[in-house]
Image (cartoon, rainbow, N blue to C red; front, side):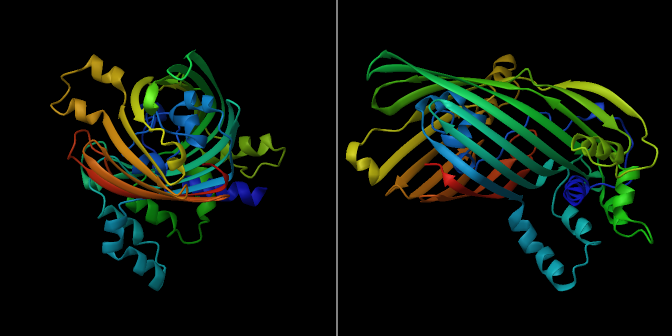
Length: 415
């Protein structure tokens, strides 16, 4: 257990060392609650409120649980790598394979990312079960972010983050006019735990692995700052099911998403609290340092979606198309309709999926004007999803386009 917790701490702190210059309340990061990455949704341009199913319904539209579809993931494992083309072109992979010199890798990577916010790597692990309108899932996500506060590449920093969540969802269907009109209503409550490090630059990251006689783990425990806290956000979804497979959806997400956070001056203090939860001995014996409590409220969002999955009868086993069109965070758009000339496009997502022989899924989409493609493979108890897509990491479209590759492997039943 100790080795496992130490490994977890190292994952959280791999991007951190001696850099702590401001209080955590100044930069709660990121300003959103936890949602796992879905290669299926990403391949469809980020659209799918009306078409998501299975485990994805927990985080995209809980009203879709009303289909009573049975799904089981034991487990679902996902990996998302950002800027993969630039990483391959830079020769970083070859350098690691040839000499394993990790001290120069941070500098090489910072040459790839331009100034501003961005992503490095995200991993997702989930166990979930749904059926009969009920759903339950446990999720763990690790993410490495880049961020800059003045737009200068030399001042870009890295933040490491870990999220743990337990989601409970319920969905019900009300048949208003049989075969013509039905209404789905669903809600998901999530117990979400977030922990993230302070910001760290390339030079500080190198020093972590270049201290003569210093144990990197001891340096992390005694000098790395970390914040952690918990919230219970709620998502509520509604579907209006119409003839010919047409569906109109609305989801209010991140309701009650107020995080009660603690700013730990020393990461070792946080680790000791984790050890106490499992009734284990402290691993950190130095001064506990200061602890400051604060709260952060993530703004709620209102999303709308339209989906069309035509009923093809017996042909659906051979060919099943679906189309999705989403408008995300519409409350923000309605508050500031003149925020920029591309405001409407900024909030629009569109995607399509074509299932062939109930085994192969072909997907494509547009997200803020950026293309995405993907494929899925169903082999009864083994499912693979892959997506390659572009996303905007800047404020406006065209500021900082970033490509990404996401893979997900499901063992269980999720069709």
